[in-house]
Structures are given as structure tokens and as C-alpha cells.
Amino acid sequence: MTAHKENIQLPIIAILGLGSMGGAILSGLRNPLVRPSGGIRVTNRTASKAAAFDGDDDVIAYALENDPDANRRAVTGAQIVLVAVKPWMVSDLMAEIADALEPGTIVVSVASGVASKTYEDALPPNISVLRSMPNTPAVVGKAVTGLSHGSRSSEADLKLVTAVFETVGTVIVVPESQLDALSTISGSGPAYVFLFIEKLMAAAVSLGFDAEQARVLVEGTFAGASELVVATGTNPAELRRQVTSPQGTTERAIAVFQKHIPDKVFVDAVEAALARARELGSSP
Image 1 (spheres, rainbow, N blue to C red):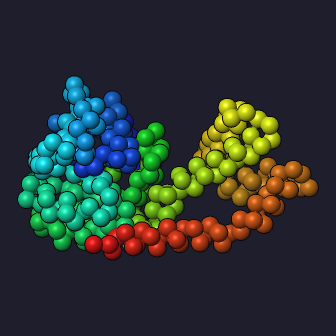
Image 2 (image 1 turned 30 degrees about the vertical axis):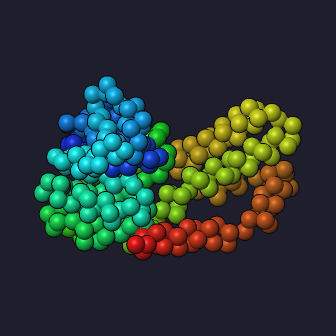
Image 3 (image 1 turned 90 degrees about the horizontal axis):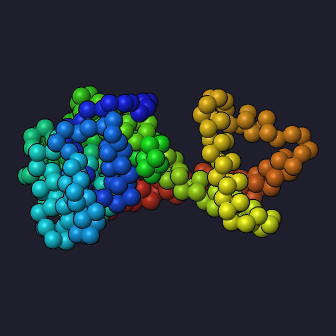
């Protein structure tokens, strides 16, 4: 496992697909301490989104809306190509850019559920492939990114791509066989946390707090509790016990949670996410 480093030197990078995840990674790459030599190329569907980068000296944005060759232009000369499109778009995109990639280019999948073999089968043998699973806290430099080798990627490739994702948080290297499972925890995990925050805010409002008070109470509590886990390294079960006085108010609330949200709910939820990830990966 690795964490963010300062003064990172990176080669030319292309990001194909500037949705929420592609945009989050771009935010990290634009950190003043990160300097991709030759800049960053990005593609998206609309000219209006590309126009947002007009005048920027570190990003060249191409829009498919008015440039059908946008993806090919973006990857020409890039050493690292991040593929951040929807999973069902990957096969067509690889066919589109395959002969525009320079020998030795590293293609990195950010598409959920798409195996590295899908890329390798569509690309020349001199193109290295790795597969990644970052999450949306990349926007604030707090991502957890799972990263896996393809069958023809080297340790040097892995090191370079690790440096890319370190710009937006922490990297954990796992076998590709574990990556779909990882996506159900760290990839989808922020949504689980946001759901709990949302519901606890609503509960605070039901107790008479206004929306702003509820936001401050709940956001501050989540931020502080998360930081306490990280800073102390203490098992969260132990931290929970420390807050839960016998026969106290917290004990009563925890009992309700455990009655209505048993452990099996969490297992069922991540297994449902895993099944869907595998469906996406097998879709034509």
C-alpha cells in the first residue's frame, strides 16, 4: 500500500472520458506539486465541457461533438492513457485508438468490471495494460485506488501508474482476481457512507434541528470519527465499545441498528455489487 507523495514527475497523460472519475483524477494531476511533462490531454462528448479548459496551459481538451478523431488525437504521443469511459464503450474505443497508440504506451482501465484481457485482446502486443479501481474521494486527494497488473505489464509500468494514482490518494496493489471485490468496498463504499450521512441528517432534522445544523452535526461527526480511526489505528469495534457505555443512550441506539441492519445486510449488499460488476465486465 502506498500514499501520496510530493513533487511527482509524470509523462504525457491522456484521459479518455471526463466524467466524475476522470474529472477527479484530473484534479489530482493538476496539483501544483504534480507536473506531467507535456501536459494532460482529455476527451469528452461536448464542446461546452471542453471549452472550460480554454486558456489553460496544462490541459488540452478535445470534444467528440466537433472532432470525431478526438480520442486518437489525445492518445498520440501519450505514455499513459487512462480509459475512464462507461464499461460498454470500452471495446469500440479500443478499436478506435489501437493504431494511434505509440509502442510502449501504458493503457490503464478505470472502467468498472472490464478485465485487462479485454484491452489486451484489442490492442497491439507492444501496449501494456493495467487495471485500476479508484473512488470519488480522489476529488479531495483522499481516494483509495486498487491497481492490478495485466498479463504483459512490467514492474516499471506498475510503479509509474502507481505514481499517477498517488496524486489523488492511496494505492493498494492486488491481483486482478480481487479487483471486482475491491470495487464493492472502496469503489462503491463512498455511496454507502453518503447514504448513512443522508439518513442521519434526516433523523437530526426530525429531532428539531434545522438543515444547516444537521449538516454540521453529522458531517463533523463522520469526519472526526473517520480521522480517529486513521490517526489511532485502533480497531473500529474497540472505538465503538469505548463510546458505548453500558445501559447508556449509545448502547440503546446501537441495539436498534443491529436489530434492523444485521451483518448479513452488508454481505448481501457487497455481493449484489460484485454480481453487477461481473455482469458489466461480461457485457458486449
